[in-house]
Length: 68
Image (tube, rainbow, N blue to C red):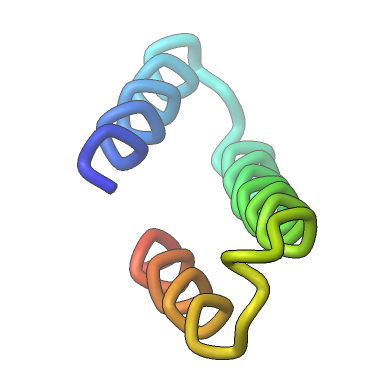
């Protein structure tokens, strides 16, 4: 989790340093969270040992923490 947050912070800092429009940064961050959620869900559904309600809720909780 800390690694993902560091990478997202680094990416955000780089966009700010290059003078990217704040609205564009907002859209990029939203898209990043969408991709993280989609990839996580796909990986969850492909593994039988991970395909359970409790694991899905745990992953959703972690993604919502990232969004905050």
